[in-house]
Amino acid sequence: MNTSSNSYTVIYAIVMVVLVAVILSVAALSLKDRQTANVRVEKMSDILRSVGRGAEVKQADDKIAYIEAEYAKYITNSYTINTRGEVTQGTDPFAIALDMKGEYEKPAEERNLPIFEARMDDGTTYYVIPVYGSGLWGPIWGNVALKSDFNTVFGVSFGHQSETPGLGAEIASEVFESQFVDKTIFNGAKLVSIMVMKGAGSSAGNPNAVDAVTGGTITSRAVESMIQSNLAGYEAYFNRMRSDAAQEPVNQTSHE
View (tube, rainbow, N blue to C red):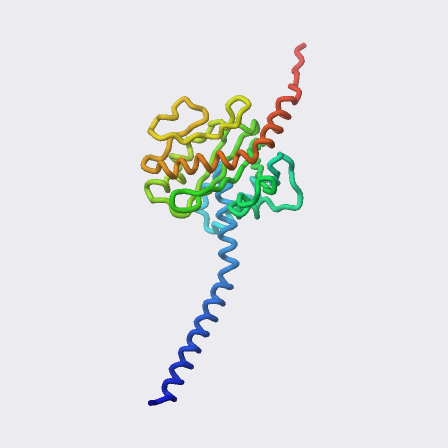
């Protein structure tokens, strides 16, 4: 038996395993910063998309620089609130938006809920609420941009990890997302969110509903559940802001 040959084989195998492990570790570390940057820019892009900005990213020579510039221009303020509607201190709204899953694993009374203010070129401000949930095959997420009445939807953006192409994945399509424009999340004083109804045209005339994706009923209903459960945490804040707006004095114009 050639023991020296066997020893050489074992040593060679160990060296190769260690070498490959070192190479993979170095590669992972070198890519970590870029991966982190890509995740941040994707979140920025999703927030911008809910207010109709960042649409020219595909034509940009430097996509990261383009999105960062758009975000800096239009997202003028951000903060977090608790489920009692109080603004909280010492938190990073963007970091929370990056890990909504972790936030919703906390008890409701411990959650910090992010809000992003988007100020448009004409001075109009919209309030972007990140949302997170579970689809048919994996996580789904999105953003709901509300007008200053904290009731009317200005726009939305949705994303998913692994929903079925052509079916559930269509929640991220313009056709589905565009239905939410000018829908309302309140019915009188009651927060009802937005229903996603099965059947083309089934939501017609309903200010609190949109049509589900054809063939993607389960994922569509998951979107409904996601929006409803996430917005519920903001209800106290919405009510306070709506009440404050209702009490603002109306400017009187004098006529001579």
